[in-house]
Length: 385
Image (cartoon, rainbow, N blue to C red; front, side, top):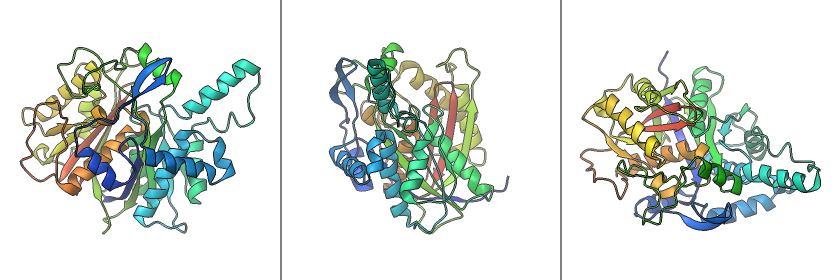
């Protein structure tokens, strides 16, 4: 395939870290996590909610148009992040660009609310269907931005956002678009969603200083915690002067399933996706890997073993942000990309505070980002500056 440069000309997000790159970077520089306790699923539960300023942005957005009042938080988060990304990239309403923003759970809060009402009354609300379909994420973002390109939404569990990046790049390289807005959004802090994670026995009930032990390969219990948020980035074909980073390589793979949430002992899917993403890059050039590492025993360890299989003894610096902001499901990959870009911009490695210290010995020029979802569908994206 002809190698065409893909530029990332903007990235924007809102999460428990904040909603501006300055605030997000400042929060990455300290060793505190972003979890707080809330009554969810009938008990006090640690989660990572969007910060106060982001909540106010969403409140104002919801009130800005009568049609927005009936939308799920996941849609509103995507709209807010997309507005900011478009502004950061300098795109105007005259630009034609595609949109591909997905979610793992979709409109989960709204779906639970509508279904509870149906159980009580035996009737569904008029807007119950259109506001809970997955496709309403990208279509409402397109409406809000008045865009005229293709709109795509998809759900590929926790690798949703990175699959959106893959798809956006495919459209650009096919010559079917010059610009694409891609990303993921998630608002999963609901009773039923948390109950599902507890049923899988992967949710943290830790009282330790760091209740999510992502990248602690010695842990004896699962410590996943959920977070919420959205992230999107602007992709453009060609080497742009205002590029924050370039997409150097991409890889993807799916495992044969033993059961619905299985992954092999050495994460064969990750080995394949990383090798594909690195096929034109010497392994020594990779400075950092932002791992998926959700804080589960098996999830963290199998990915680490896959990295060992691919890189041998000369491992790059390894990190994850889930010890800090939790697992944001479909949005997690794009938030990992944001961390990668910030580390390259500031030339500073952000590690995991309770993991073995890793020393940055050279400038951070290339970062590999991993994501995998239930069903063993892995994506690896290599970014460079």
